[in-house]
Image (cartoon, rainbow, N blue to C red; front, side, top):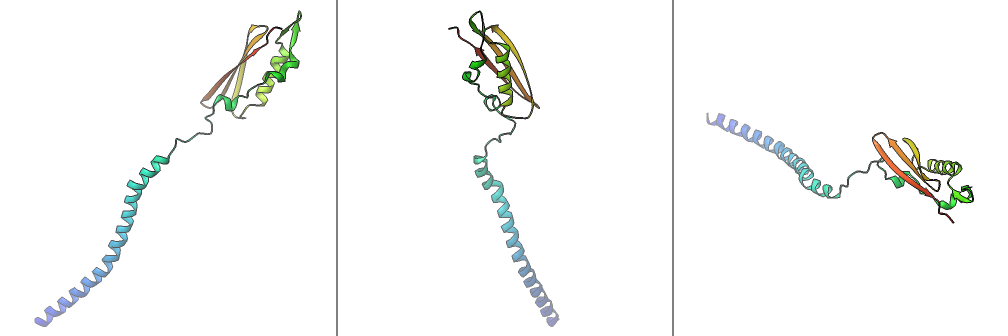
Length: 147
């Protein structure tokens, strides 16, 4: 019986050594992997949150990015005269609208406009640009001073 006990003890020792040899690398690898994920979850996230800026959407534009600025000097030769005084005529308004539409900052969306005449020397041109749910408006004030 004593001999049988020694065999069992030796067998258990060998099995224990095998289990120990297999479990140590498994425990080490799993500890490394879990430590990496804990690091990513708690420490890396805090640093990246500080650097994150709100994303700029491509279609979010200001009116200055869509509607061009116009220069009065470009339209001096289109001033009409009525009874010797300068007025804003249809030729000038058409040229201004054409200039604005051709120099728009985007080719996407729809554009509409309407004109309001305060006097024959002052007109307002209202533009509205619509792209999906985004809408921008711009008013151009066209005026001529009397000489």
